[in-house]
Length: 457
Image (tube, rainbow, N blue to C red):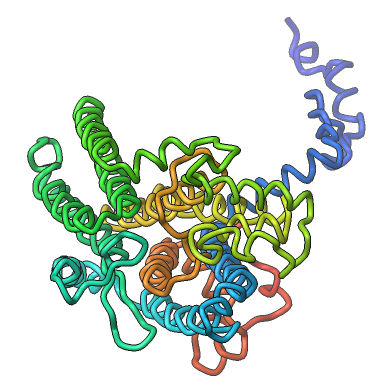
């Protein structure tokens, strides 16, 4: 073939050379474009925003801090309202019980603050002295002439004047801290795979506490301690067969204790009662139901309860939830339930997201303690469970119950702050003036003012 023929440009090649090429920015994509996001509507957008807010690192921290504060403040208001008639009937000032509860709340706030500032190593170191001190005080209660009997239960120590102490309330906190430290140490040595190391000495120590409590006749506190033990065993990964065996033994013992005590049998027979009975054995349970039924949607008004005028026993302690339902209505009781549900969820979230075994066991134990006690108290007021005589955590009157509970809330707050994402978010939310003064953080400019730390959405 001649050279001129082979070197001659082809028409199609010349056309491609001379054809103007489009700018890459102006070229249309050859692949089909993605579909626009589907409009979820106002309800769907609200749900998406709530899910995003729920997944933020600071959610559990704020739920614990805000939920416990709201429950405590609302409890102070209801103690003031529910205890006035009881105080006047006893010849005391109308604000007697409220002032005592306010002092206990202030002391509890100091304990909460101290618990949030203490390192985890110090919490673990205090668990053994706290357990030994609780056992000693609970044994001292049973000494004739030292312990005091209230409402048929001998579980109190007199501190002089109007102040009394119930050591079994501090036994709950001691069992949580000591049990968490014990299981964490055994887990570090890979001993929790053997059932004897999982049960011993946790169960024998719990049986010692339960025995001292049952000597005083307080079965309600014994139920809470049993729930704490089962919560710790569940978090430690107890096998289902062993868990069911221990649960069955506990149920048999509880049945024996109930059948051998006429008072407990009478409380069990009042489940769902609508009439006090010929001997008024179900008086308290029935009038608690009356209080809730007369509240309506929004209640009769703060301070306008009728049942607290001598009809409802223990209106400011065990049955304060009934007075809340009468004065604040269904909206008030649902608000209290929502606060406890949020607090329980936050505790479970703290226990589930940590990598430290002690934090997981302690947070789970505290959450089990507060949640189960709230369920037992509210269930008794609603007539769904027997009256166990346990207060509503952070809500009912009683300094002995409020102080260790607020310290336990401080533990949850301290554990929530251990999350690196939470620490980073809290560091950014510090005042800018404080960061510039002490030289921490970076200078806030227009470019960095809207940025959020890594891990926070």
